[in-house]
Length: 91
Image (cartoon, rainbow, N blue to C red):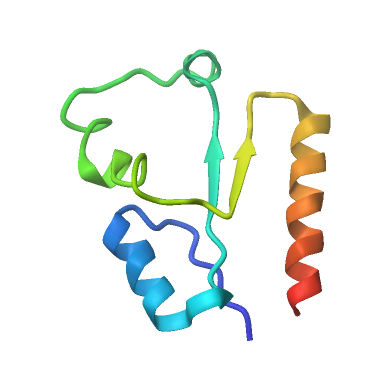
């Protein structure tokens, strides 16, 4: 059976899952430009947005998938469909 972990925040989280489940682990990172994030009312807060829980995976992880969510619905749908096809192919 498949499991989805929707919110790993630290490198040690990813390392644990990879050690426990090996090649079955697929990591997905969703990104948006700072401009897009600001349009969505995000404002950087020191001590929060630079904490390990928010940026601990910014380096040191080779993500299997990087999904860009900058507001282009067609592009987002295409990326998600490719990801879903891959997941379905592993079932």
